[in-house]
Length: 89
Image 1 (cartoon, one colour):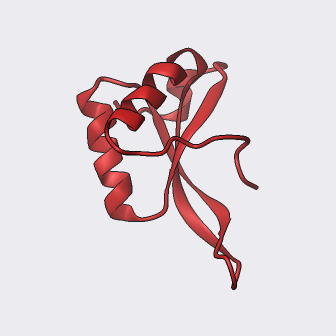
Image 2 (image 1 turned 90 degrees about the vertical axis):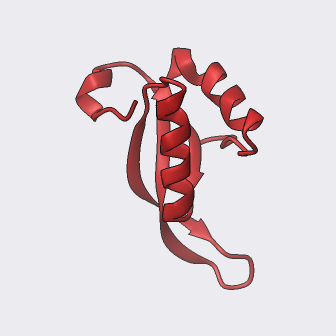
């Protein structure tokens, strides 16, 4: 279920996915909600493009660190490529 930042308190959160389009973000929200995964989604900036790099805004999906493995598996099972590495800044 979609949660507010206060719900997670001092828990460490892990970035699992960056949705680059609204349609993709809404579909992922539906998937996570249906699977009863507590998640936080926030807009943030990332760099995109190959020839002409630009700064863009996407929906960044986070889960509590202890739920990360299951959430990543869920995404992979449904055709999503979970985010790997550190959050882009």
